[in-house]
Length: 160
Image 1 (spheres, one colour):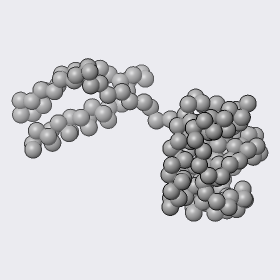
Image 2: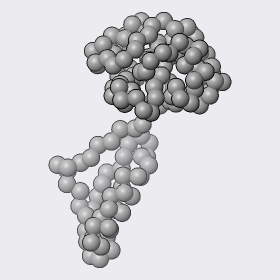
Image 3: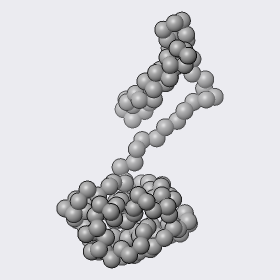
Image 4: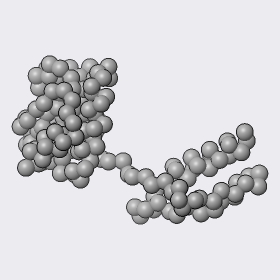
């Protein structure tokens, strides 16, 4: 039991390390209290990716104005709700597709229960509703779930 706790603490410390100059330091053997030694197995290396900064949550009206309407980068706006089942499926799928665009487009997430004024302003009558905005104007829109191919086509149309 104590060995599991020590191993868990060790793994947590290794995973939570900050990368140096964009790369993770190589894992080496490490001695743990109690005479245990942990040696990483190259066959079981864990690779991680950095958190994408292409997706953000809207905090309020002025934040929406600043980060979406005034954005020079095209923005995909995901109007969603916590209680919405389809939103829970579409959200991660859309985030993944936006991240694949490498900064050519960003994604704003708007919870309609927290920001009903924005939902009314942009005529959101059902969730999930996704808007494509360029230079502050809505250029495309869809309601409901889409598969990855449809999402890719939607993003390519927005990027141009």
